[in-house]
Structures are given as structure tokens and as C-alpha cells.
Image (cartoon, rainbow, N blue to C red):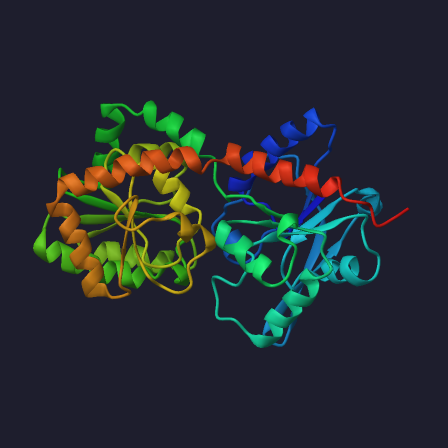
Length: 374
């Protein structure tokens, strides 16, 4: 079977590796075709260095204010028993697979509904038309699956994947962190014994970094030893570097690999993320760092994993309210410890192992459907 991706970021490589292992048990070969990363994906340098992904030629074509991706695919796709592609209108291969040269079985993989941007009538209409041509749907989360089912797609042909990252690695590395590691990172970042919040992710507009900086200043006014440390790369890295030079409560720590994140989890109290929450929700569970976020309308599907007051804090989309909630956490250690404990429990539910098993089971069920070709 074949999976086509626009690109494969590093965090997806462990998932595809586990999927391949599961496939061997049932004599299923998973072939992953992907184009080259561009835009924010390239800026973040979040690209796998070694994997079994087959890179195919692709070209991004602008048409008005929209972008389409053209792929030069090997003829091998015609032999696949099942072809899976992201549910989007930008993939030109999807139109061929839906209306012209249809694979034996065709499935979409995606959010299930539009989460991270304002909906447009044309795009929603095209996505609905394409959806009706699919045989199966792999939805990231329960909310996406419900949206697909509500559109009229057979609920029996929907798999809830429970999108995740490789949390087992983070958990393992956390257990190996020493006091010496913690002291070294504190020294490197210039952190004293004060309270610390952390941001880990792409430094781009969707993360609303200016919101965090503004809130940090209000928090520092009440707790002068408070600091927020930013880890990541992206188009707004210069802004964060400048804020770190200008404000004592802001620190820039560069990029944080899994090892660094594990050490950070022993220093920080929680993760600040008022902008787009996606897979970082899963990382927050594994790191036992509760997420403090807002009811912003453009979160990614994984925002659904967060439970306000249980494994996260979700405030109104307001800087004053956000800062007040964080000050409250700093002054209520029992509440913070309860959130951390519940993060550890949530980490057992959302894992890349569970995600691979869910996806593979969906593939088995989709392959059991009658083929479109005789």
C-alpha cells in the first residue's frame, strides 16, 4: 500500500517505522512517497535525516491566493492495493485518483474538518466532493471523525488514529536526566532558582509569540524571578532573539531536541502556548509539563486532548486572563502538581505505538473491502 505526503517531518519517521513493523506481520508493505519540505517546514529544519521515505519530485504551483502541489509519481502507485493521501484540495494527484485513474482502494488521512484556518465556501465544497469519492477515512482525532461522519460518510469506514508523537522516547530520556544535566542547562540559559515557563515549537505567527511576551511581562511584575524560555526556529526567531535582549523575563534557548526537552521538563513548571496547539499537547503529557493555553478558535485537532483543570489550563483568549491564570498556578503548587500527575496519566493514552496500531487496524479493514478493479 502507498501513502503520499507533502513532506515527512522528523516527528513522523518513528510512526512510519512502527507502521512498517506491523505491516510485516500481515505481509503488508507500506510505501511512503513524499515531496520536499518548503515554507515553515523548511525554516524549522524539522526534516528526517535517515528514513525509508521515498522522495519524489514535486512542484508547488500558485493559482491566485491558493497553492497546489504537483507530484511526479512512479508508476508503482498503480500496483498498490490501497492509496492514502491527505484530505486537501491542493494535492493534484488526488483529483486523478478520485475521478480518472482510480486506485483499487482510496483513502484520505487528515483532520476531518477545517481546524486551523477560517473556512471558505469553495474549499469546503471541493473537500466534500472529494470525500464522497473515498473508500475510507483516517481521522486524526475523535472530533474529526465525528465531522466526517456527520457529512454523510459511512461511520463504519472511519478510523480514529489518535495522532501522536514518539512519547516513549521522551519518557525514557526524562528518566535519564541527572542533577548535573539540570545545573548545566540552568547555567547555560542563565536561569537562577526562579520559576520557569517554556515554549517549545515553531517560531511563527500561528503561535502568537507576542501574546506570550506580553503575558510574561505581567507575570514578572508579580513574580520578578519568573522567566519564559523559548525553544524553536522559524520566521519569527529574530523577534524572539530581540525580545530576549530587551527583556529580563524572556530567554531564547535555540532548538530543543528530545534530549534537551527532557532536561527542560525538570526545570520548567509548564508550557505556554496561547496560539496554535497541535502535537505539542502530546509532548506536554510525556514531559509532565501542563499546557497553559487559550480558547483560540484556530487550534489543531490535538487541542481536543486537553482537559481544562485536569491535564491543562485553558483560559479566555485574553492576555490579562492568561497572565492571571499563570500567576494562580505559580501560587498554588498543589494545583500544579495535580496537573502534572494527570499529564502522566494522559501520556499512557496518547502514544505513537497506539497511533500505529489504530492506523494499521484501519488499513486491514480497508483492504478487506472489495477492490474497485476486477
